[in-house]
Image (cartoon, rainbow, N blue to C red):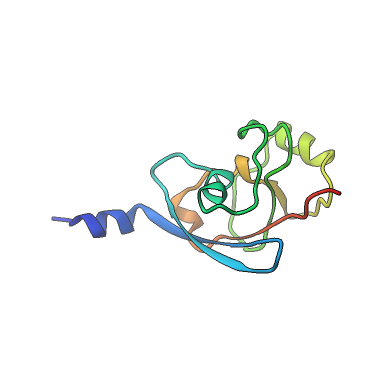
Length: 116
C-alpha cells in the first residue's frame, strides 16, 4: 500500500523558473490538478501577471522554454498573441497555455522581460 508521502511524490514534478532578476526557482508542481505554468508561477508569487486569466489574450505570462522537453504545439490563439508580444524568441510560449503533465519533470523556463 502506498502511503500519503509516496502518493504525493508520485503526483508532483519539479520545474525550474529563472526570474527576471536572474534567480532560479525550483517549483514543486502537482500533475493531477490540471494547472498550467502561469498558475504555478503565480502560486509561488513569481512576477507573472496573467491579466487575462489564462485565455491567451494578453502575453503577460510570456516565458522562454530553456529545456528540450517536447511540449504540445501552440494553438493558433497563442501564436497570434505571441505575434504581437514583445521580446519574442523561437522558444517563446505563453505560460497559461502550457498544461502541467508528468513528462515535464525537470522543465526549465525563464520569465520573459516585460514591455516598457
